[in-house]
Amino acid sequence: MRRRERSEMVKMTLLMMVVMMSSMLMTMVDSSRTVQRARDDSEILRRHLLANGLGVTPPMGWNSWNHFNCNINEKVIKETADALVTTGLSKLGYNYVNIDDCWAELARDKKGKLVPKKSTFPSGIKALADYVHSKGLKLGIYSDAGYLTCSKTMPGSLGYEEKDAKTFAEWGIDYLKYDNCNHDGSRPTVRYPVMTRALMKSGRPIFHSLCEWGDMHPALWGAPIGNSWRTTNDISDNWSSMISIADMNEIYAEHARPGGWNDPDMLEVGNGGMTKDEYIVHFSIWAISKAPLLLGCDIRNMNKETMEIVANKEVIAINQDPHGVQAKKARMEGDIQVWAGPLSGYRVALLLLNRGPKRSDIAAFWDDIEIPANSIVEARDLWEHKTLKQKFVGKLTATVDSHACKLYILKPVA
Ligand code: GLA
Image 1 (cartoon, rainbow, N blue to C red):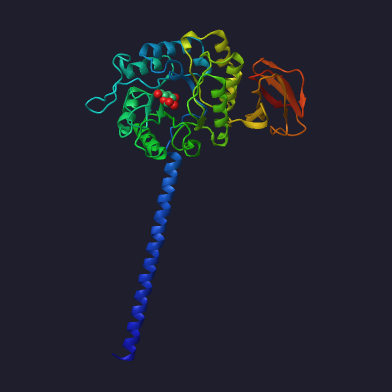
Image 2 (cartoon, rainbow, N blue to C red):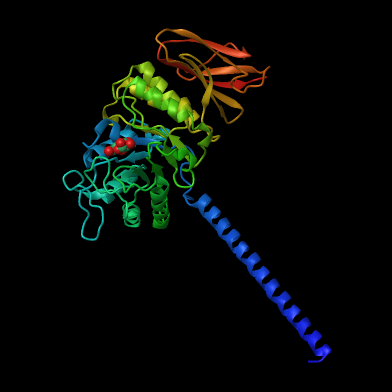
């Protein structure tokens, strides 16, 4: 081979190598772009997984479990819907009628569909949904991310997510409480999104309430999957259970936001295990914590005291404030606590809480509750239903009975 030919060949080889290398480089860039795109897609999916537009403010309504446990039937549900309307509670925002555990037969039908329990829900859930909707209310139902629900009297939805979500949508269900019993041992972060996707695929906007009891800190991963997430174990109708749950839920305050709320469990107000003051504390903390306000008593037989508490419009308005920020503990001194949270219009919700055995003075300092130092503040007492004549500078002090609270809305006026 002549020298010229040889050098031509070397050139060609070099050129081919350059072309090959640049194409390899392009492939690498391309595949990293693909990976990036996939990442972006999954980010979009992650953020929009639960794009159902529900829970812009915390849900309000009723749930059967705290009062009735498994003793439910279609008559109780219908009468409760009637009572929500006749008492005026539905006008205040209590519009979800939520059936908890024990509504279905233990066996699915031949096609694998859930079957409403014949002895207690003979007309079926669709008829019940039609009835509840005719009253201007919404119907909620219960299932479980396991093989059986917690009562073990009916199947869970694990492995049947799409079928069940489709059934719920066909029936006209508006809210699903999804529990965490009797599963296969896989993580809730694996089991719960399957139902989220199934609900989205069903095409009906269904509020998704994750009932994972706070085991794996759902406040940290619940937002793209659920509209609310339980942060604690089950509430009982007594002071120590209620207050300890309030404490546990407070830890996650930063994670609550419109569309996704911390859920410290359903209300016990009206079930008889606490004093009036204790129930006022219970309702006040749930309201300022932007918790779902799901009544748990027998709405058909509420006394005046219970009604006065749960129908307090101004307290409900704190819960439903468009700002959607959960209140937090601002100061703690033994049994004395100050809780506060911002509201729309530069206002502040302030709770003075006495957890101790003796009546005490409690002071809230502007510094602790994020009100500018020199502000002159007007205070509205939400349980006394009056705006205090005195204007406050720097702090507000009040005397609070044992196991009681004061709840104010503070408004800087100068
Ligand atoms: C669990 C839930 C409760 C209730 C029961 C029903 O304990 O946390 O709220 O739904 O199951 O069995």
